[in-house]
Length: 450
Image 1 (tube, rainbow, N blue to C red):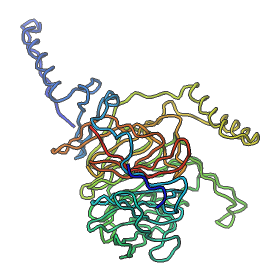
Image 2: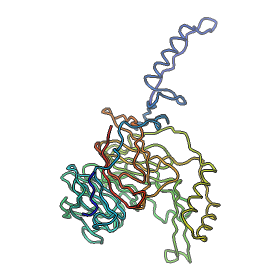
Image 3: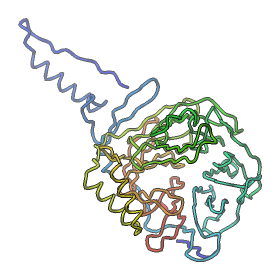
Image 4: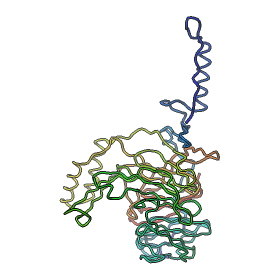
């Protein structure tokens, strides 16, 4: 380990033959039964039955292939896991500023093994060599050319060009690996998207945008609302393409205090979200973008050429929000503060909360450069990492695409405690992780082992 502390399918219905009195010929019946069972094993089974372990029910709905897997796949262990220790660790308890992390929000690995880590505070992109030694900074806080206000995404493009997404000014910036600003593009309501909620760097240097086309004025009824996000491709030149479809977005409660009509009469806007409410996730793939919703154990792939073309779904049983579980979660919240007034405010809030019947199964998604898609499985209580606020997720369900384009479940991969993936390929995975003892944030590169 290098440590740098300082520097759809159709089925035929076969009738049974019968005698003159309508009695079923049992010999024919037995052959039909055997054939039916054999076909069931080979091509799948009917709705309500269960396929063999790991074998999906496959549906073709207007060109969208839906693969439904049995919940038993969640009990399988993937054939690869992370090594016990990271090959590269970037971070330090004390030392030079370039090794200190406040909010590392994104990261990538160059083909030659170098790393580019996007830090939000201060807003800059840091380059490290394959051993984890600091090389250079790119960008700085500010609103001018080559500067960042709220950077949240980075990708390595052909020729080692770096593409950075700054969500505050809604601007894309292209840099050479040496740090020179090559060009910029500001996005203003692309495809009628009012506010870009997610941007994922897409294939060939383009990007995929997700966001609502409804304005705040369309939500004047306020209260608990959920956005629908449009999925729109952006060409490598920054031109807006056609919409690829819509997905569920964020679910929030919006409370507006007013002193009078119009924008001048707004005193405050309080936006509240819950960890068990609907939430949209997105992650780039080599062909477009994977999306998911916290409330369903499935992922959807939007191809930049064809739109929605693949759905992977796991039929897992619900995990109930039992009274005991709710009480334990409330106890953890109360234990996090000693302020009596705040504790009473929490108790009042507990009385008003409405929990769903089941625990939402998904907390994040991730796709690696090897073409696999990872689903982050919810474990309660949710733990938020201090750098960036990523959810610390240990169990990830991984699916791999075969040469024919179908996906198969590989099983679960377990990540270190208090960690979240930033980037990965067939060789390893780049994580942001909190030290359990010191609470210090690290960025670490772990290699896979069989």
